[in-house]
Length: 119
Length: 500
Image (tube, rainbow over all chains, first blue to last red):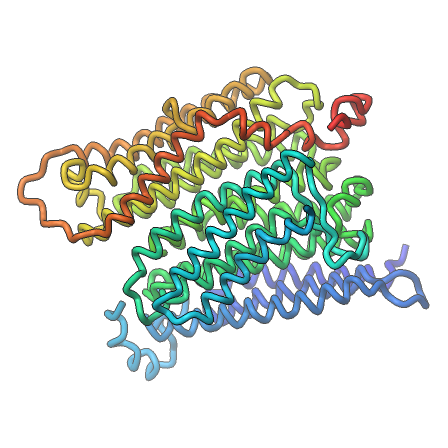
């Protein structure tokens, strides 16, 4: 049995989802974690577009497309919020990951050093 | 009447916008006016529902499946009531605590809290999977923003971890929704309940939805983000997050479990939820006992108490609508939601008062608190009594009913879990109270604390006890037989479930 086109897209979405989840767990840098989260969110949009397929030659189901539009807005806001938080953390503490690691960009880390004591 | 259903959502939204536009000095007044209006709207709806039964509203007049439906039944009503009854006192506390803030992040408390409240109310009323996803995002982002209000480093780090966990949870949920929509071409919970058939795609979808919700409900082992986020937030925010926000995810699991996915909610899956809940109840309570910091103790205690909620699932699943322990299981679960809501809000608020007065978050700073701040120590003790489950508190009804349901259903192995969790809870509550009763010579002077803070904490503590006496009203509103899954009705010939 050969898989239909939309099933291949759905499988790709599942793969991207797993990649995103894996990235969120395995990557340490804030930025990588946030990118992985964005990837995971986007895999849902791919899945939604894949399930909107009806039959060869027919127009796709419009409802999932509407959902994707809304989802993108939500996803972008969440991503922007996460980036703002990560930037704030790096400014206040100089850390670039949850384990308290410092950035390789030494200048920036030193610049923020005095800020560490401030609440 | 059904348009009245919009009020619990629209009023807090309007309040959020109004608070944003109001000068900082008057935001609290503006927020409290809208909070009172929201509570009023919920009470009016409760009275209306008592006469007319469950209500549905089609937004913009569009019928399902094209439009989005709001639905109000007993379960949703109880959560609306809990949110309003806990939210209002916490708002008063926040108004008193943040009264003098004129800059910094804390001036955004009111807009964010009202957005959060609107989101939670919308979630309880939604009968559409995608609408639920959107309001879950509103709730998640407003919660994280509230958690980082102080702008301090630990809060920021915990906030980012919280947000990432929430994003992963929402992602899993949305992927699941896509799979379910792909199979049944509808998002309406009512239509799904009629259409859902067990298939690989829908089962995977349900598993993803469940996994996403369990992250947000912080069920063991997906609770990793909760203790630091709840412990590092400001006291009123911790109270809101612990008492109300984690309950939204539990509500959804319960709603989907008994509604659209009842066909897939089989006893083995329920057993998994029950086992995770049992481990959470023991592990969270044990961790709470080991904490030296007061707010971390309360945060770990939330993990344990949420675990107890999930013991409800094996007890209500696969029993058939006529099982005589169903009432006990539903009462136990719903009472646990209410009792923990009031008690944990009271606990976080009273701990906030202690920390404000002593400037120290360690357990040792509590020495002779019973002599120095009797009112707040009493509030803390009342909250503790309810969390442990001593009579005559709401927590007692919850644990007693869960025990009763476990024993009468023959699933006796949940009973020792409930009992052990209570012992551990007694452990951490009494470790604090023991120090509070110890006389201390030369303890540092306390800073003055606004009286209103102490009054609201005590009011919530009393609430955690008093609901123990109101079982009949709560059961009447819940009307649990109407929530029994359709599948049970069909197995039993349809007479049992269909009557209501």
